[in-house]
Image 1 (cartoon, rainbow, N blue to C red):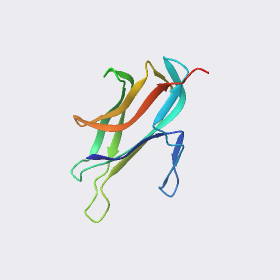
Image 2: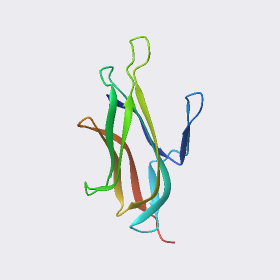
Image 3: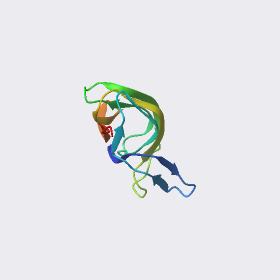
Image 4: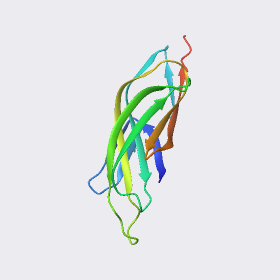
Length: 133
């Protein structure tokens, strides 16, 4: 299994035809001071599974701050369907809206996914303090 897509954006949705629309991708945020709060953002991640991976799989997403400690944790699960060799490998597309996310200090924040005992790296954000004018 591996992360096929990982980003943070303003909005994302999966269309009825199976395609995903993504709006406002960002990697950096400016804040007037810390702790800072982002009212809304969406974590988008696609995990491509090995063909041997099947069934219900629990996952955990941590937003790890510059101090190495999680500042946000989301727990969930996904069901992985068996696939024959004539079809694409199974994939899980996570579209996780996150509300009122607090960033305690400036620096790099990284989303880490834990699935089946493995730690997978997700997208990162860099938080900066805006210059006072």
